[in-house]
Length: 128
Image 1 (cartoon, rainbow, N blue to C red):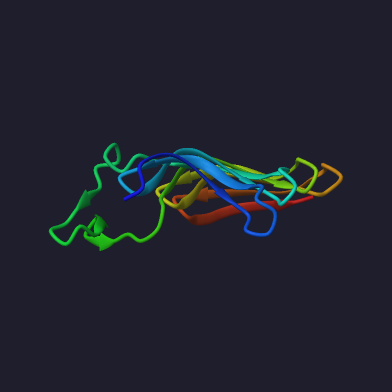
Image 2 (cartoon, helix red, strand yellow):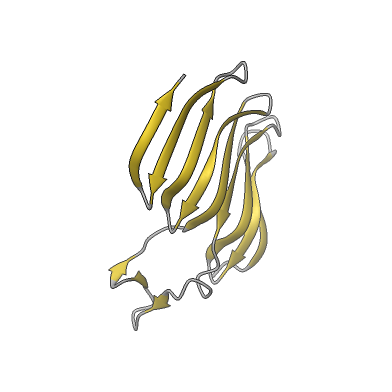
């Protein structure tokens, strides 16, 4: 089981693909993801499974509200970038669901869309 700070590397050039902390085999805290030239592609925040009152059942499967959870859990701020470190979008996740205000930008850094989510459900949007 992975635990502690980890980096992954692109197989073809050995540059960093992603980096962040693992806790109990799952991503935890801030993770950074890169394009192949060490150009930041995105930042995700993953929540510590113990802090979220999520439990492992007797088969060591992660369950939330009785449902099996697979993969990592995004919870908190999220940013994604175009190549060249220009912001593409930003928002918040709540237990893997988009929540609150999400903003999207064009490659020339102009606001193109705002979306508002309530725990994964799109409730409003405006395009510019």
